[in-house]
Image (cartoon, rainbow, N blue to C red; front, side, top):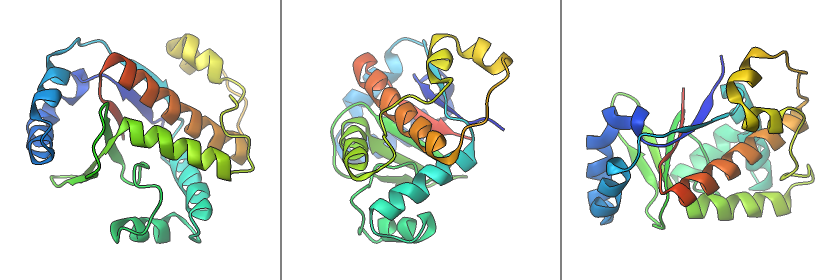
Length: 190
């Protein structure tokens, strides 16, 4: 099953109340309100599938000095991680403005709320620590960006682990940049 990154707020209207409460606690109510009053346009980036995120998070975990993503997740929960804006939850949202108190919204499913500027900084740090050539675009990535519908209809050459990690890094990076430029929400959901 594919997993997408969505930039925009139209598909998040069901979550506006929970996000508003979180934003109020951060002092960001007005900024969040403006996000939901904006355009209903959305940009979608294919981020392959949930297993691809796990592979990426395992790589990030190793760079952060942890054996795997489960140990790194526990370290994150204890405040012992350099990479606090990674998609540790199935549902993760990043807002396009700066704040430091990242965390979760509790509900039917916990949803992580992070910030795009910090996500970009962390992705740059991961890129500098990694030996995988993060930032390079794997085969098929440009085709996905040009026409995601055609990309989904076409046959794909399977990616190896390194290209999968590069793909997720690139999709998160591009998604955060687009969200900040368009003053929109970046969402990774199931």
